[in-house]
Image (tube, each protein chain N blue to C red):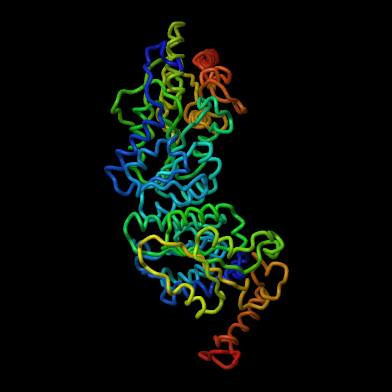
Amino acid sequence: MEIGKRVGLEYGEATRNAFGEALVDIGRENRDVVVVDGDVGNSTRTEIFGREFPDRFFNVGIAESNLIGVASGLAASGKHALASSFACFLLCNAYDQIRMGIAFPAADVKLMGSHSGITIGADGPSQMAIEDIALATSLPNFTVIVPADGPSTRAATRAMFERSGPFYLRTGRPGVPLIYPAGVDLEVGRANTLRDGVDATVIACGLMVAVALEAAYDLSGEGIEVRVLDMHTVKPIDRTAIERSARETGAIVTAEEHLLEGGLGSAVAVAAASLHPVPMEFVGLRNTYAESGDPEELLDKYGLMPRHVADAVRKAVARKG
Amino acid sequence: MTTRAGSGHPSSSLSTIDILTALYFGGIMRYDPRRPAWADRDRFIMSKGHAAPALYAALAEAGYFPADMLGTLRRTGSPVEGHPNMLVLPGVEASTGSLGQGLSIGLGHALAARVDGRDFRVYVMLGDGESEEGQVWEAAMAAAKYATANLTAILDSNEFQQTGPVQTVMPSLEPLKAKWTSFGWDVSETGGHDIDCIMDALGALSRATGRGRPQMVIAHTLKGKGLSPFEKDEINRKHGVPLTAEEARTALAELDRMYGGPGASDGPGASGGEE
């Protein structure tokens, strides 16, 4: 992919790789960490943990419902359980098990869904999680984190094991632009301001943070100064940052590699509407599945490139009145 | 309980109650009601969560909470909810009520025992209708793979589900004994209302922490056992239907006659009403 290169962003590892390496470090420090995977450990990168800690790694086969139940039972007996698969299979196939076994009892289970969004690319829509943020944020007791790059994924992985209770961590397949330096911290529930501006705020998560930064760079050339927030924690959402951005910039655009229904945009809109309503525009998938293809070509075809974010900002700014 | 609540699943509860009696009061399970989170306790999971009234009765009798709370079943604010909620009631090991999920959770507990080197045992009560859920068989496969000898499933084979006999709704569910055997479990069968028979099946299980086959005990039970209004219903043994107040009075008097309760004509303390 080329996203972000034009504005000087370097490419780093895939977020799933950063997760897998961070998980092993955490497993070395905490003997209570156990991992349950649905025979995709070489994709979710939990296999690294499994090689080092075979007695604490359970590959339960291609059976996500049981996977979640086993993780729930491990947690109920005092383990810090990590359950992983492709995001679409984990959230969609085992949603009731997540509801009953993790959300309802507020179990100490961390879910990691990999291969999220449409940038999984060639494998096509059956493998693309585009509704997972809506599903995860709909569950009471859950914290939902969508990190933008490798360093922040490492920090997010560590942060969720420092807390008790259910988490959903969303990662992706391809290598992505580096937003943060190595060793960065991530404060759960607190958005990061990556660029300041006075004319509008783009609130993004995941890969779309890099897309937003490129759009902001282009808009600056037109005299539109855009604030960019990395809203890595979609739930609980940072209402303070949303209110401040609404007051100080007067327009908000959200950007996510997810359906518009129930995702980041919905969460930001609910907060903004009750705190300080301003014109808003939304970048995301519009009531559609994607298709097989090159990741960047798909981002372009489905309206998730920097030019789409820039168009949305121009529309929102024009509505400020 | 369910008659007072006006809803619930009394007949599905009654088919499990003799097994629960053996587990909790026959010396099979190791537990301490004063320490519901004791790490070495044995776990019992009521996967067929609609049999909650039976579980609650056993837990109250065991001392996890006062028996008078049973009268608050299904009332707003009561932890004695329609289906088991582990967050609000001590002794409840899993929140159930969505069928097919308890065995996976039990397997997770069993694996945790292995990770921690503990010798507790895990018991999971499944329904026969519940066994139509695919997740049950996912868990069956995985338990055999991990050779969790500390995991015992008990099948409450009461032969009825919501709309009719299991044999009619899903005739291909049988042969269950052959299915569980082929999945790598040690399978035994028992009469589900004969305490001696249940004790024979469950009382001899080892506390050794090594690997071995998980066990399935198929318990042949009667849905609504002991109360004639349920036993006589040929449609579905009055699934999910509590007795009316009048039916309950009649049925309880029958029980008293059979077991010598307070309403028995030969007075309290008598036993063996059939003799």
